[in-house]
Image (cartoon, rainbow, N blue to C red):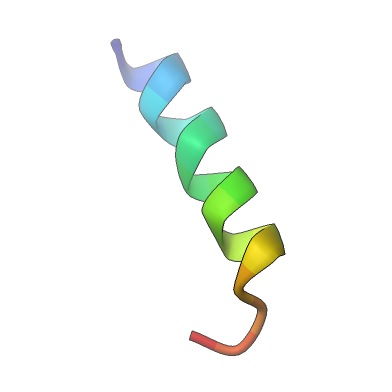
Length: 19
């Protein structure tokens, strides 16, 4: 699912701001 991947990506970006 694209929606799930997008959500996970956003969460990962929020936890690791800068990468």
